[in-house]
Length: 224
Image 1: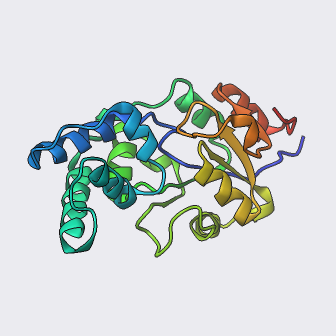
Image 2 (image 1 turned 30 degrees about the vertical axis):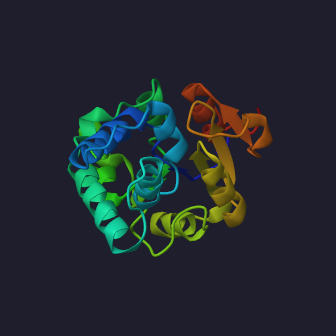
């Protein structure tokens, strides 16, 4: 049977890993330096999705710290420095994610994330996943981030596959908008960091069990 896809491209945070607690710990380290109270896990989940710099400014505003101008830029730079230094081991993979990657190992796999590149590699190295992905495009790889379609299209070009034969897997409104803008088939991990009801986000597959994703990518196009 002909497989429907030649490649699967994944978002990272909220899609393959549950990184909210790790990001909350990084934010707490930064805020402690500023003498400010830490943010909650709920705030962390609310702030993620558009890259480390956007997260940092949302965090700064929430704690009444300077978020714009030279002072804000210095705060963001320090947060990103702590982010790059954070142990990748603090980011657990979702249950079933590694087995799913094993099941899809015959396809080309890529990553398209708004997470900065260094923290992305820290996580992939901690999980032993770096060599699983033929292309990794992070939030600071290009001049634009998701939901601009260019990072996803760039990942596809790096993998050398036809866009019509690619499945993109994400968890959020940002990922959904990216897939729509790029015209790429999309699967939604419903246990991630979205704020919109899953049924309101267009996707060929909505899943909370990674075995459903691997089955879909390898041959079943039935919507869920």
